[in-house]
Length: 244
Image 1 (tube, rainbow, N blue to C red):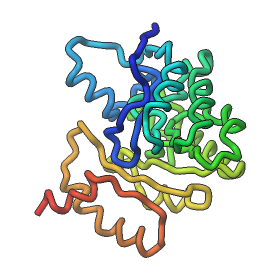
Image 2 (cartoon, helix red, strand yellow):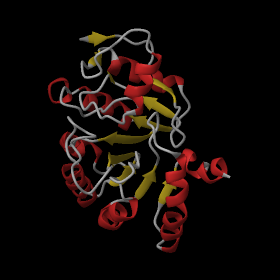
Image 3 (cartoon, rainbow, N blue to C red):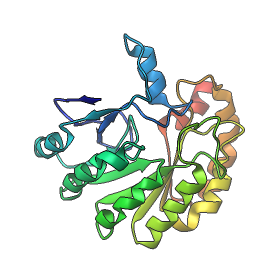
């Protein structure tokens, strides 16, 4: 199924980027914690099949046009879906759009859960304005939470390959799932080949904020003491203030 959009590069609601660029609607991975799926389910007027991925047919044309209309900044590719979900192996849409984005003065942050992204490392290598990031929720695969997504172990290997090719990397430790995600262990394991760690909480899920309030002091102390290059998302930075 295909859809057409009027714009594809939009002002971002994600605090660490200026814009987002989504080339698919829906996501085959169907992660149980996915804020995009849960938010869409909450606000969309009619039931929808989130795994029934729809392709933005005019994505390449829109990317070329939108880049000319926006002031250069950071673009998250993608924020509401995964650019390298299974359908991408057939459409190659992510690569086509990435070719447009990479040749622009914008800074591109690719975020995915799929080692399919390694297919495009040849396009990314040697470019200072493109970074590759993978969502890492555990050092093990967690099929209950991520039933149709490539496992964390495959993502970690893809991060290693990117680093070996001289590509700048980041790991998104988000969501921090209680009892499943152990940020310190993940960072210790990945630190040699990841340039930046982004840490965020679960959203639209029934996780008490007190969990993060209890865990954060020790984590922050460890991050600072070990001089880990990290970015703590706003919802975590504000937790201690919420609990007081």
